[in-house]
Length: 399
Image (tube, rainbow, N blue to C red; front, side, top):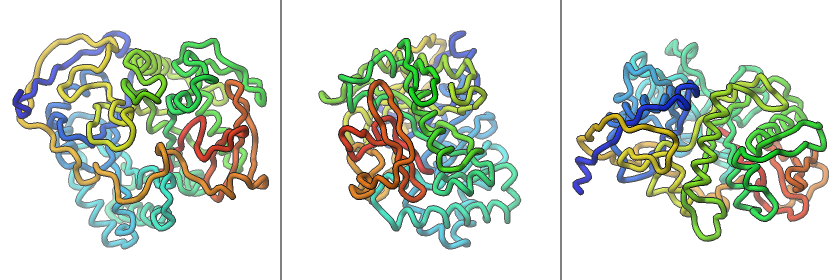
């Protein structure tokens, strides 16, 4: 088939999606077979999504979504952080990638860096805060700071003082994949009877909420009481390698369908029942050029031709054609040249893991003892029994 004329099926949301107002979705583009952004606009609107998160500031996407009312988080990639230490470069970036699209395209937030502290790169981490400060200063100088915020989770104190959100990537899938024999599948798919947290006495009927409240608890233990936590990524892959337990279309359908029901209920967590999680589902499309295990390329709700990967209750109502496929790998759409720890999890030093002085708290999740530790401004959970250098329950996104 001629890829320049790929049909893009459009879908209207069923009542199930109508109830789930204000859906947020991650729009990744590490692929060479995605439809042009102009063809994506009706698809996004048809599923009721009102918020999109980019990992760059792709001009094709920002132009295509002008005057649609869809809100955007744009990303300033890790590869630009060093350059942004120069205030003039920061202002030039804001003018080129944000100001010129306002107000037609509703850019509301700039996420500076992506999972910066999951890389073993001290230079990259040291550039994060200066970059955020200079981007914010540029917004102030251009009188845009009232409509566009800058966020980073590198410094909890700054976030608390400014009221900016702490962005977390919460993935029950990774917890299940790491230990499928001990973690009940129905608990991670929102279909279990749940567990009672031995520390708080709170009942959790799904791991997603347990992960979020683990972060809430950790932040409070570190002395920060007014941090607003939001979920910048969560999802489930429809395909994986032989050793990636649970990565199937049926499990992905169950997870995301139940997740969207949860969004529709507009409820918080057992620990913070009034918390607006502002959830962004990962991801809009499968991305065939993402590195790593097979699951990384199969988190999408849709195939590149716009057809659903699995049934989430959509009804086919029309057809649109794309003039040309998306080139993929746009300015910020490729990974920077830094080494990532195994499986994309937060990497820590073995000495830090073994240091009993940095233990803040302990929890039991599905019979698994997790130890909360603090290293600098980083908080994480480790398996007490295995002391693995991974975050067992969730991976944090320090944006």
